[in-house]
Image 1 (spheres, rainbow, N blue to C red):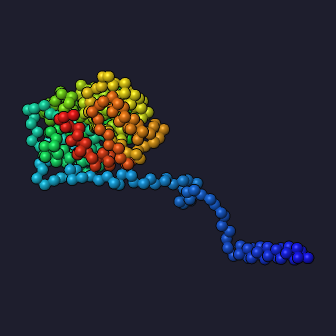
Image 2 (tube, rainbow, N blue to C red; image 1 turned 60 degrees about the vertical axis):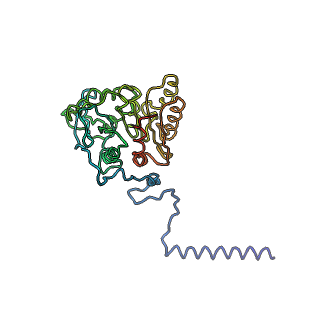
Length: 334
């Protein structure tokens, strides 16, 4: 009897609940239950996942006073943007800028530093502001007088001689010049661009490779290393920020080549910088690649320094430590 009564009570409760739900549904539009990992932002984006915003790993890195104009410091001259068409990279045009220190003695061979992806370094309001850095360090005699040449990768030209605006083609040209493991870009500097700068500004660059440095970021970083590795008779000082020592065009082999040069190391001085939040993609892992390069340089007894921080794929960390990096790179003693 008790069992029948319990079943009857349960049936009555369910029926009332069902009736109450139906009553609500008559007055309330039915809302489907949808489970989304990333809710769509609007109708046109329905079904798309918005990009996940990465933390700003570079926020801790700030430019110091040496990247700013200082009272009482004589300023060098930074040229406006200029263009150049050479022959080694046919049908391309390169933009470049030149920095001359204050009171440069043109009767003596000039020390040289080349910057790849040059506008990132030359722009007075950009991430590095090299003209101010040079002015301040040269003024305090923490650097010798150095001429800066800032060059951008070539831009392809169409059949009428106009610049190609397709980003795919311009990026491919940059990769051809910077990621290829060959002496070609060093030859472009030696035989085409630098002689033009010498003639244009009535200067002569020192032929002593210890008086020449080359610097770059990302693919420009590995390009700087390649120029010195292939032509240590031209450049013996290298600075690389978040260098692409990965398999874009075979650059992942460098840490092996460096190790194998142990018995006959090249006369290079190398400054590397990278961060733990640098790129990780189909070409490789940038933090691991740079750590491998540093380990190989140590093993083969090179004159090197490796600054490893927490930044991403940018110039923020490299710019923040640029004054100290320059002083280390250009020091007289090992």
